[in-house]
Length: 347
Ligand SMILES: [Zn+2]
Image (cartoon, rainbow, N blue to C red; front, side, top):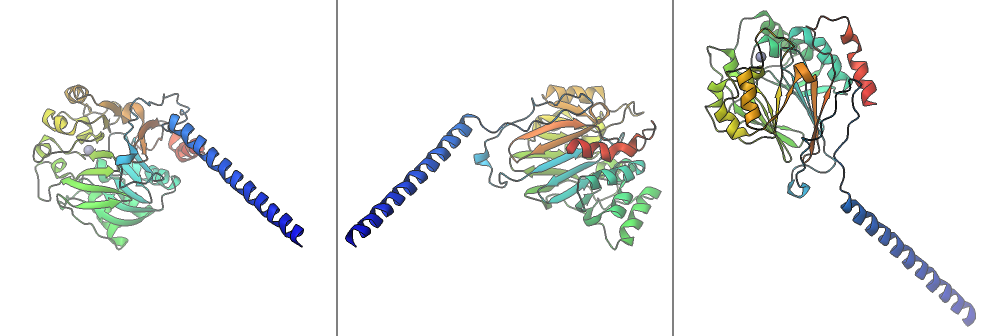
């Protein structure tokens, strides 16, 4: 009996020793893995080059210590599409599980834009912002309203009598929705990010451009400005924060992106939405110079196509992709391939 108990006891001790050694080995392996991963920090996302042979630019990937980030967790994700919609404007923010669309291009872009956004897996646009009532910003919005489940719609409280504007209002009301106006300082949470209204004018202006809703979006350590078509008139009214990425006001026009505004915002990246050989001469040479002088890396939808920014809240990366959303582009029927092309690339 005693012998058998002793054996059992020995066996038990033997088992326990094995367990302890096993645990120690696992702990040692975890330690080694963590040391190795510290030595080789996670690489900035590398994107596969598109079939257009547009080199993916990684020089502007900026690393900020994740320790400072309190809002965004490591598995958060931000995507901002600065769509190539020709001589027009449209930007899509996908922040975690929330979606904001700022402007929707010309009327001719609406259907391609809706198709493209659907192919990204977006079912609901939580926040739809028409920066101002010009056709190159709200033209495609009627189609967007018809195509998606929509949360809130924001526009300046300034109406026009254009057919585009009236069609949009009709589509909105047919869906049982309404348009809300915003005031300076209003905040809109988008996922774990926050959008703040920096400037807007809700009364009649000589130029509708100067009613533009200007948005400051902060996601973790990354900061963005979306200026609509605001001119220097709106720029000089308030103080601006420093940002990483500026969606340049009014397609790079001479009357926007003033020196004073740029010296406050100090954008590292400037994105200009404009059409190839547009009749307005956008972007203006002097405006480009001012952006260069502040040290901003400039992207243009007429040259680079759609610009896609991705971020985990600390590190962001920019790539350019071909999307063929611009409905004004007369060449063949290439818009038919748009969505499929992008899906293939994403796969
Ligand atoms: Zn415009």
